[in-house]
Length: 153
Image (cartoon, rainbow, N blue to C red):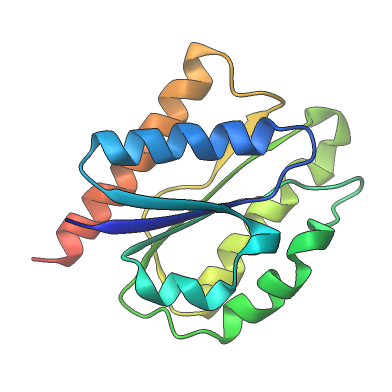
């Protein structure tokens, strides 16, 4: 059974909701999942899991979650070769060019750590409430599992 670590950062609760939806979708696909808040998690915990997921918020004009800066700075220095990663997050399109930039920043950090991208990044406007949002997050989880399974053959 594959294992996954889902780490989230949230202010409004929207990213925790996204993380919960991803966790549930992964569990429905037969993955054993550990979910935690970013300030309570060390980046090197990803070494113990097959699938690594971060669900960060973007603050103000492109700032990363303050409580996750150490985590973010440690991530590129890890050796996550052979691990599958995905990044999803909630943001507010009001911020235009700064919309969900933390999602892209964490994806770059995972690539620097030699992890393999298992799903396209997902960016949700505000709360993940619409059918489209839920479908996107479910498809994200399925893509991660499919990528993991393909890497095992």
